[in-house]
Image (cartoon, rainbow, N blue to C red; front, side, top):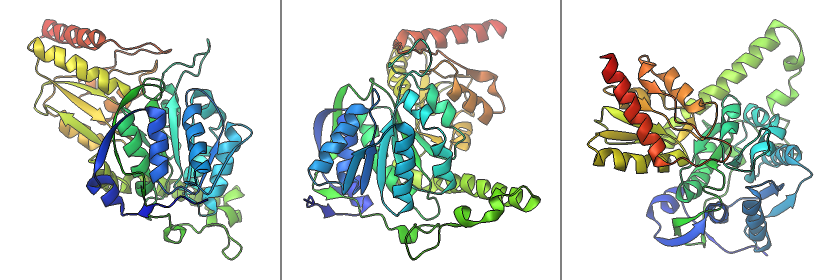
Length: 387
């Protein structure tokens, strides 16, 4: 049974179609996105906290919204098989979390190197001993240089919108790269929130592999160059040069995606109170906590602003520089031990002593707004003492 839906343009589905408010979990928001994404195939393997979302995608298959769906042997098998489905010209979807991300790590740069527009949802969780299934996004730091694009959702609404828009951005001929759409597990996946959805009988246009910069695998078309070219497996100057130029093209493709991210997602970041001297810069769930901290800071007379970073790769270096040109202090709260977002922001700024890398919580801890508020206050006091 194939479910009857009406194909509409991305612009209509994203910006024009009437929406109704529903009260759903982040996992359900994933399924709602895939219901409208015109996906050909999804492959799943359970790992908390992403299991429920892929169970729901399996239900969509049973209802006729997908052509094919199955459970693979493990996370690496999922990512290898989903790569094969994409190489064959299909629009595909999968998801994973934490240790599953690490077990499948080899495949992510392969996706990017093969220039496949795979969309994968990552419901981030702890990966270290002692074992934790609780929210933590350190795995994002491990994916920064795989070549995939990376979007970080604040809430279920972001999660729904980013997954759908990721397909359209990824499939642009001048981009054609995989996209990871990330959330902080449980905080989003297992929490109900208000999400605005268009009608379920609408869907995106199908993927057209003939518009891809690399040919799909079939019986009539030779495999793409990086698979069939023997020079790339030799040790000589020509193979090194060819390999390097291909990697440069992957990175260039991500930069070319910027205009499409602006068009469909409204930009790589959002700024609240752009003339503030004090900023909180965050991504993912830390943005929601920062909003509460911002409210308290303003009540206490501190004129603070918020930078919500939506795209991690490509990273909005120029936008961050422009947004913080008059800032005296930039506090970066994160749900991980390493502080990868603070490092990215510091690398983008010349005058980066303004950046306070923290507060950081991890191992499943929540981040009370007071933690952010106190970090801002203490940093302001320290700077006042220096001056």
